[in-house]
Image 1 (cartoon, rainbow, N blue to C red):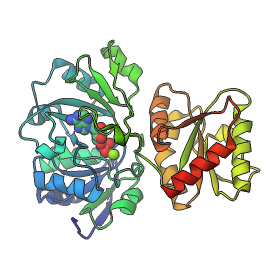
Image 2: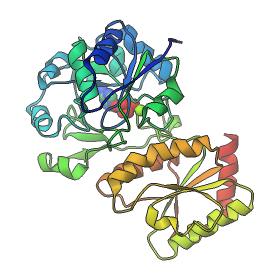
Image 3: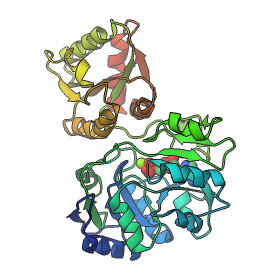
Image 4: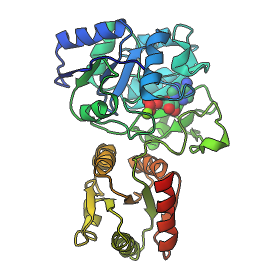
Length: 373
Ligand code: AMP
Ligand code: MG
């Protein structure tokens, strides 16, 4: 296992100290690992041209070798270094959405280390909308391969503290630039597919992309581990972004929905479970008189805030070692679709409908089986 003494530096996200950036860039050039904030989540970066450096990312994250990484650029002209036969649509989209939370899958250039792409003929690239990674790419002169800076299957890191929790002693440098402004990963769009296909929902809402791509396709998004992995769809495992505590996801819009969720919380608490509810501020009042751990995600009218807080609240509840996290799903529109996707995966693909009476016994059994799993 790649082991080092981790150094953390605090940086102004709008005006990072060039001396610190230079030091971090030096570590990258020496095949070291540098974690940095982006507008989406914290990335764990390595020189994308060095198979040795890239191998260290997989090692310290315990990431399966078949799950490819995203390459980060600082200027449009760098696309030619990492990709080949780049279609005009890529430049068109990049002009509009870069820097920003849109990752494009393109044909890979042979310069990029093969393990970046998990052996695929394609490479995923984006330009982050954050001064710290942009400065790192510029100063090092390197395209930087960077997945999220968490242990595989853990919730993505949205603060430097999260990175330290997962990777202390296994990353050379952590650049602490505060909390990530979006807090959800990038939208991934495969431009080698015809028509262009969304592989992962993310920080860029699909309605925007449809303006440029009317025939946009959405890939089948959820694959169970035992189904065998279609190689065109890595990173689509249902169990991903998970808290350690079982998370139960509920839909339901009728007036009966919240009282049913409240009853369930109350019954489980009486059975001795340490129950938490992850909820909007508006819904929280239905639960405040019960003795529960409430994780307030913010107002239902402010989806960006819910997105920003989601992974941090998952980690906070994990640290409290709650027995179960109950969540009512947001509407699947705009950024709500991305938030739904992350919750659905954390719930391992299981959803309960609050518009119907709940089988509390069945839910208690599910919790027991998840605990022993
Ligand atoms: P992460 O940055 O940890 O969210 O992971 C990067 C994700 O990007 C992977 O899990 C894949 O879903 C996706 N990805 C990266 N490269 C490719 C590629 N060449 N083809 C398809 N998907 C990719
Ligand atoms: Mg990840």
